[in-house]
Image (cartoon, rainbow, N blue to C red; front, top):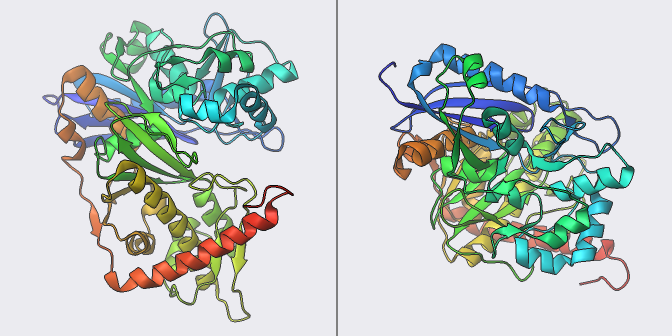
Length: 490
């Protein structure tokens, strides 16, 4: 191991920090993780202590140092959950708790900012559908409530980069999560900053920029000072990079608490209906991103409801024992609302076709099928926007079930690949991108050790899934009509 050149990838996730060590061929030689808690001081809240992030970082990186030769570390790359707000004082220390993307208390503030600037104008400029989960809406809520003032608004990865290098910088994909990054001018949109009452935001620099690791952190970790720390990108962007999606064709599908589906475009392509988000990639191009909210959480909810102790994985195994034809129709909008291709807050979860004979397995298969059908809707939109129908590169714990992968292939008519040996694609992407940016590693290192299970669609199931989608869509449209206020019917 002493002769290897290693890049370290760090992903600051929703509940834990993941760290990996990768060599120049793209092989992951060591990995570690450390968890941290989320506080819920009131309904809708999701807060974390940034100090816990730094402690977890030290713990995970310390474990990598035990498993590898720290003198072989040559670059460090960063990835993080998005959007997550950290308010900073003038000396760079956090003011209050960090507010994670799962926090739902700033919807009023998001609506007010969108109204002031114009929702359609915001989407055309930023590629984002502005709401209460963007950093600036979260900050505006703090201002409205008179919480302790902050000098600077930052994202989670920005704060971690500052902790490691002493300099506060953000990248274009993370800046998009603020809700005020103009894709066309590649600068901050002053009108949005003003509407949110923001005093200052970090400078935006390319994802490939790097700064030296500080001597203090190097001593703490037992590594050489001055190792380049690459700015990196958002978790979805580097998850796609780790899956080898950095050009036209393939689609990255990251299945976790929510499901992120991301295609690639060489230019900014907004959608007339605003059905997807446009996010700058770490390298050239833009990600066309669609998020199915709370899909993994919906599986956990049903597992708890049915008494399936091992959670979503066991629920998916249970679903495999039922046929699609016997499963009730389940609309999986348990967030509530939907932010995939429909973007409709009126949608809530629903079940159609229950009988006294419906089994637990059939209900589980129905929920799994509902998630697959919304995925199909998203993938069809991205294929139209990108002009290409490539394979689906699946990652995350939600993709581990064989039934889900086969259903996804059959319902979309696409090949689905899944590497059961690698779940930390955001951390992997952070390491590989750092190797490319600071050490000149090729893009091909990202897939050199990809060992996927390959699932091909069954042509015999195409008509079955097409009919199921028609039923699913009809039930969805009926619910949207019932939920519309006067004058809103479509």
